[in-house]
Image (tube, rainbow, N blue to C red; front, side, top):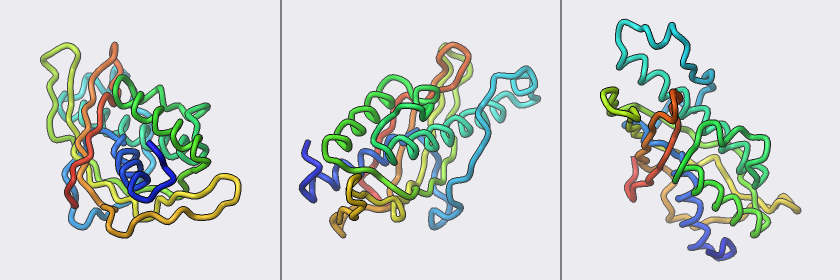
Length: 192
């Protein structure tokens, strides 16, 4: 896919943001407010697993992993490379492959993404009775302040004005061993 043309860039940027992108995340809070906030890495510590409410503990772990996944993606897209970002600690399977292929496209096009999206994730389903455990996140991703630039010159790459800058993303997470990871993200063609 060519990132040099506007419609290709639009499709690429939407798919890139979804990777999160990622991450079957929460139903949007009104107006997609409450930007992305840093959360500590999820741990499988005994205190978390012995919670009085295993569902609540699992939801908290999944959200922490999802936010860390976004932190890693933002670092990776800012340099068009997954190296030293920790992306592989949070993304697995289709989610990791999708992000890595988008990073290759960025690198080939000589582009990077600067700024950061706002996310409003919510865990909408958790299944702890199966192996691996599974969770779904619904998110409203707002990419208004996540912009594409030419890596060498720093010039902003103008994207089509009609593209979605706020959209719903559905994210799938599951355990890999005893650790939650993001495994697939799907951007919906609807605003939030």
